[in-house]
Image 1 (cartoon, one colour):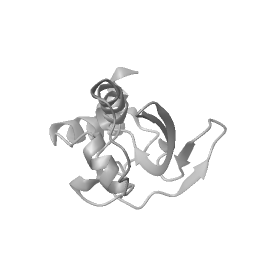
Image 2 (image 1 turned 60 degrees about the vertical axis):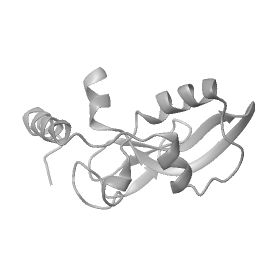
Image 3 (image 1 turned 120 degrees about the vertical axis):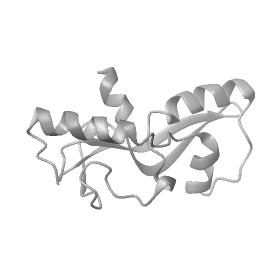
Image 4 (image 1 turned 30 degrees about the vertical axis):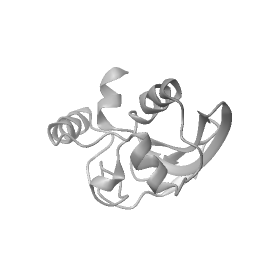
Length: 122
């Protein structure tokens, strides 16, 4: 496990993960994960949905272990609605996902880890 208090170790791990070209999540993978078989989004909605989901790592690349510490996450809720924190790394995971599909607001519950590329945009 990496030392999440060491800027050097975190930077090295982020570089390593980005060099792996890990998949970003899209609606096709997400709907299979959450077993969604309802109406499909419009083309315009799909663009917005995929833009949102691309912020997350696609765990179909492997298992649902944390990509930073390579262990199952130990998640606890935080004050930010729909978000949990992994006690191993201190990183946020998103659990509640609100998507508009065919004009209807839909809530999905699935723990997703942010893609490592997101951390370079901070």
